[in-house]
Length: 190
Image 1: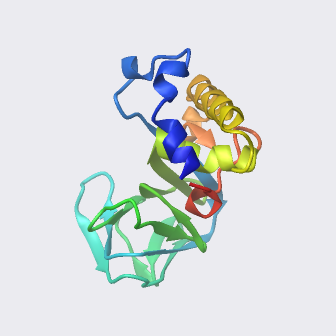
Image 2: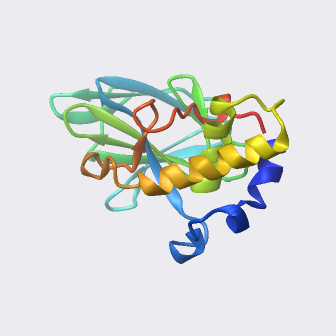
Protein backbone atom coordinates (compact mmCIF):
# COMPACT_ATOMS: atom_id res chain seq x y z
CA UNK A 1 0.00 0.00 0.00
CA UNK A 2 2.73 2.45 0.96
CA UNK A 3 4.65 2.05 -2.31
CA UNK A 4 1.45 2.47 -4.37
CA UNK A 5 0.63 5.64 -2.43
CA UNK A 6 4.11 7.00 -2.97
CA UNK A 7 4.12 6.24 -6.68
CA UNK A 8 1.28 8.66 -7.32
CA UNK A 9 3.45 11.68 -6.40
CA UNK A 10 6.68 10.71 -8.12
CA UNK A 11 6.24 12.30 -11.55
CA UNK A 12 6.63 15.76 -10.03
CA UNK A 13 9.64 14.67 -7.96
CA UNK A 14 11.52 12.87 -10.75
CA UNK A 15 14.03 14.81 -12.82
CA UNK A 16 13.04 12.76 -15.89
CA UNK A 17 9.71 13.65 -17.44
CA UNK A 18 8.37 10.21 -18.37
CA UNK A 19 5.34 11.90 -19.95
CA UNK A 20 7.60 12.82 -22.85
CA UNK A 21 8.37 9.13 -23.27
CA UNK A 22 4.84 7.71 -22.96
CA UNK A 23 1.96 8.26 -20.53
CA UNK A 24 2.27 4.78 -19.04
CA UNK A 25 5.50 3.28 -20.38
CA UNK A 26 6.02 -0.45 -20.27
CA UNK A 27 9.28 -2.13 -19.48
CA UNK A 28 10.41 -5.51 -20.79
CA UNK A 29 12.11 -7.42 -17.98
CA UNK A 30 14.22 -10.43 -18.94
CA UNK A 31 13.42 -13.05 -16.31
CA UNK A 32 15.34 -16.01 -17.74
CA UNK A 33 17.30 -16.82 -20.89
CA UNK A 34 18.61 -20.08 -22.31
CA UNK A 35 16.03 -22.25 -20.54
CA UNK A 36 15.09 -25.71 -21.81
CA UNK A 37 11.65 -25.57 -20.14
CA UNK A 38 9.38 -23.41 -17.99
CA UNK A 39 6.02 -24.00 -16.33
CA UNK A 40 3.30 -21.36 -16.77
CA UNK A 41 -0.07 -20.91 -15.09
CA UNK A 42 -2.39 -18.05 -14.10
CA UNK A 43 -4.95 -16.95 -11.50
CA UNK A 44 -7.64 -16.66 -14.17
CA UNK A 45 -8.38 -18.05 -17.63
CA UNK A 46 -5.40 -17.46 -19.88
CA UNK A 47 -4.42 -17.84 -23.49
CA UNK A 48 -1.22 -18.61 -25.27
CA UNK A 49 -1.00 -16.49 -28.41
CA UNK A 50 1.34 -16.53 -31.40
CA UNK A 51 3.10 -13.19 -30.90
CA UNK A 52 3.64 -12.62 -34.62
CA UNK A 53 0.21 -13.53 -36.06
CA UNK A 54 -1.74 -12.66 -32.83
CA UNK A 55 -3.71 -15.94 -33.27
CA UNK A 56 -4.70 -17.86 -30.16
CA UNK A 57 -2.87 -21.17 -29.93
CA UNK A 58 -4.61 -22.49 -26.79
CA UNK A 59 -6.81 -21.31 -23.92
CA UNK A 60 -6.60 -22.72 -20.39
CA UNK A 61 -8.64 -22.67 -17.19
CA UNK A 62 -7.30 -20.94 -14.06
CA UNK A 63 -4.46 -22.75 -12.24
CA UNK A 64 -3.79 -25.08 -15.21
CA UNK A 65 -0.07 -25.75 -15.41
CA UNK A 66 1.40 -25.78 -18.91
CA UNK A 67 4.93 -27.04 -19.54
CA UNK A 68 6.67 -25.04 -22.26
CA UNK A 69 9.67 -26.93 -23.66
CA UNK A 70 12.08 -26.35 -26.51
CA UNK A 71 12.99 -29.54 -28.41
CA UNK A 72 14.76 -29.71 -31.75
CA UNK A 73 14.56 -25.94 -32.08
CA UNK A 74 10.75 -25.86 -31.68
CA UNK A 75 8.47 -24.87 -28.81
CA UNK A 76 6.15 -27.52 -27.39
CA UNK A 77 3.19 -26.92 -25.06
CA UNK A 78 2.60 -30.03 -22.91
CA UNK A 79 4.30 -32.20 -25.56
CA UNK A 80 2.24 -30.66 -28.40
CA UNK A 81 4.34 -28.98 -31.06
CA UNK A 82 3.65 -25.27 -31.35
CA UNK A 83 4.03 -23.65 -34.77
CA UNK A 84 5.46 -20.50 -33.26
CA UNK A 85 8.83 -19.53 -31.84
CA UNK A 86 7.42 -16.43 -30.13
CA UNK A 87 4.46 -16.86 -27.81
CA UNK A 88 2.72 -14.63 -25.32
CA UNK A 89 0.71 -15.59 -22.25
CA UNK A 90 -2.29 -13.29 -21.71
CA UNK A 91 -4.97 -13.23 -19.04
CA UNK A 92 -8.51 -13.37 -20.43
CA UNK A 93 -9.89 -10.97 -17.79
CA UNK A 94 -7.06 -8.66 -16.82
CA UNK A 95 -7.19 -7.07 -13.36
CA UNK A 96 -4.63 -5.92 -10.80
CA UNK A 97 -5.28 -8.83 -8.47
CA UNK A 98 -4.69 -11.46 -11.19
CA UNK A 99 -1.27 -12.58 -12.30
CA UNK A 100 0.58 -15.00 -14.52
CA UNK A 101 2.83 -17.53 -12.87
CA UNK A 102 6.14 -18.71 -14.33
CA UNK A 103 8.17 -21.32 -12.47
CA UNK A 104 6.08 -20.70 -9.33
CA UNK A 105 6.61 -16.91 -9.30
CA UNK A 106 3.75 -14.49 -9.99
CA UNK A 107 4.03 -11.54 -12.36
CA UNK A 108 1.83 -8.61 -13.33
CA UNK A 109 1.32 -7.78 -17.00
CA UNK A 110 2.01 -10.25 -19.81
CA UNK A 111 4.67 -12.88 -20.31
CA UNK A 112 6.46 -13.42 -23.59
CA UNK A 113 8.43 -16.57 -24.33
CA UNK A 114 10.69 -16.79 -27.35
CA UNK A 115 12.95 -19.50 -28.66
CA UNK A 116 16.43 -18.31 -29.47
CA UNK A 117 19.20 -20.54 -28.12
CA UNK A 118 16.75 -21.82 -25.52
CA UNK A 119 13.68 -20.19 -24.07
CA UNK A 120 13.82 -16.52 -23.10
CA UNK A 121 11.11 -15.42 -20.67
CA UNK A 122 10.19 -11.73 -20.61
CA UNK A 123 7.71 -9.92 -18.34
CA UNK A 124 6.07 -6.95 -20.05
CA UNK A 125 4.81 -4.69 -17.28
CA UNK A 126 3.97 -0.99 -16.78
CA UNK A 127 6.98 0.86 -15.37
CA UNK A 128 5.12 1.94 -12.22
CA UNK A 129 4.13 -1.68 -11.44
CA UNK A 130 7.71 -2.81 -12.08
CA UNK A 131 8.78 -0.41 -9.33
CA UNK A 132 6.48 -2.11 -6.77
CA UNK A 133 8.90 -5.05 -6.71
CA UNK A 134 12.10 -3.03 -7.10
CA UNK A 135 11.55 -0.61 -4.20
CA UNK A 136 10.54 -3.35 -1.76
CA UNK A 137 13.69 -5.26 -2.73
CA UNK A 138 15.88 -2.29 -1.91
CA UNK A 139 14.50 -1.28 1.49
CA UNK A 140 11.86 -2.43 3.99
CA UNK A 141 8.40 -0.83 3.86
CA UNK A 142 8.88 0.12 7.53
CA UNK A 143 11.52 2.71 6.61
CA UNK A 144 10.51 6.41 6.62
CA UNK A 145 8.21 7.49 3.80
CA UNK A 146 10.68 10.06 2.48
CA UNK A 147 13.37 7.38 2.14
CA UNK A 148 10.93 5.15 0.21
CA UNK A 149 10.01 8.06 -2.07
CA UNK A 150 13.67 8.76 -2.76
CA UNK A 151 14.29 5.08 -3.50
CA UNK A 152 11.33 4.98 -5.91
CA UNK A 153 12.64 8.04 -7.76
CA UNK A 154 16.14 6.53 -7.93
CA UNK A 155 14.79 3.15 -9.14
CA UNK A 156 12.62 4.76 -11.84
CA UNK A 157 15.46 7.01 -12.98
CA UNK A 158 17.86 4.07 -13.12
CA UNK A 159 15.37 1.94 -15.08
CA UNK A 160 14.79 4.70 -17.63
CA UNK A 161 18.51 5.35 -17.91
CA UNK A 162 19.21 1.63 -18.50
CA UNK A 163 16.17 1.03 -20.74
CA UNK A 164 18.31 -0.26 -23.63
CA UNK A 165 20.84 -2.25 -21.60
CA UNK A 166 19.63 -5.61 -23.01
CA UNK A 167 17.95 -4.45 -26.22
CA UNK A 168 20.00 -6.93 -28.29
CA UNK A 169 18.52 -9.74 -26.18
CA UNK A 170 14.90 -8.64 -26.77
CA UNK A 171 14.23 -6.95 -23.43
CA UNK A 172 15.08 -3.69 -21.64
CA UNK A 173 16.49 -4.78 -18.27
CA UNK A 174 17.19 -8.09 -16.56
CA UNK A 175 15.85 -9.23 -13.19
CA UNK A 176 19.25 -9.58 -11.48
CA UNK A 177 21.73 -7.28 -9.74
CA UNK A 178 23.17 -6.55 -13.19
CA UNK A 179 20.21 -4.15 -13.57
CA UNK A 180 17.84 -4.09 -10.56
CA UNK A 181 16.66 -7.15 -8.63
CA UNK A 182 13.09 -7.85 -9.75
CA UNK A 183 11.06 -10.58 -8.09
CA UNK A 184 7.66 -9.87 -9.61
CA UNK A 185 4.45 -9.83 -7.60
CA UNK A 186 5.81 -12.19 -4.91
CA UNK A 187 8.43 -9.60 -3.92
CA UNK A 188 6.03 -6.65 -3.63
CA UNK A 189 5.24 -4.97 -0.36
CA UNK A 190 2.39 -2.74 -1.54
